[in-house]
Image (cartoon, rainbow, N blue to C red; front, top):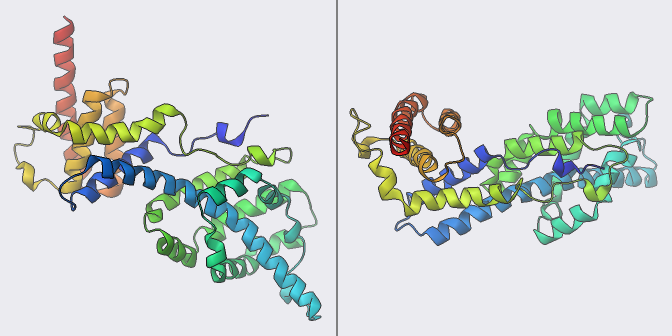
Amino acid sequence: MQRIYEIFDMLTRRHLRVKVMQQLYANTISYPFDLKVAQQQLERSNTGFFELYLLLLNMFIEVQACGRSLHKLAEKQYLKADSDQLNPKFFSNQAIAKLSNSKILESKTAKFKVNYWEQHDEYVRLIWDQIAASDPYATYLSDDKIGFVTDKAVLIDLFTNVIAPYERLHELIEEIKPSWVDDYPLVNTIVRNTLFHMNEDTDPEDLILTSIYKDDDDKTFAINLLKSVAVHEEEVMTHLKGRTPNWEQDRIAVLDMILLKLAIAEFLYFPSIPTRVTINEYLEIAKEYATPKSSTFINGILDVISKDLESKILKYKS
């Protein structure tokens, strides 16, 4: 049986590029630049991505337990469940049961010490209240269909439309670890993919991703990219000389300069990556993180540099 973590990747190359960009940007305000410290911070940032993934998967288990406790309390006090929100159907959700039965999820959660729900149980109750009052939950309870497919479908619906957009959850994530704010959109996608690819016959031990990297190449890519800019900055900068006729280098926006350095480093030290792929990646990053005009500015410079490098290679080969 194919394992879920073999179906899709955790961190994409673009996300790794963004993390290197963020690390270099952070280091512009800390002087002098310490490569060893920067590498350690980058690795912690990447690990933090995986921690957020574990946190969100555990959320389903904790929220279900919260609802079950409220249901038992209502039974003891002979209270009618409000609007059937405490209907026991959700408490036997088979998709959540797979998460609960996953020893790997349990061990990874303990290893990375992400038992934050125990410290913030008030947020578990808030999330439960959001779920219990939602339309997807009401539809699920009123549906006579039972089984794994229905149970999985409601989890995906609840996570996508109720939980992920919930502002108080955003608040908690930023409080625990501010760097998670940038990771949150992609981690949400990974969580949805984990749920989507879960089947009734999926072994709980094959359920979750166990690494944030696709392979060893991806694992070393970010560190090597950071090193290439830090160690070879002087050579990287020589390729920018004279390429910005209307701008002095010290007037180029900090983020634009970092993106240019990263792209040039890829041209020079990552020959297996096509230059057009590199350019397109940094243009997309610029559109999301830099100014509205940054992508046009960066594209013009990188296009000239890439063509110049390609002509030199052709001349050398001839």
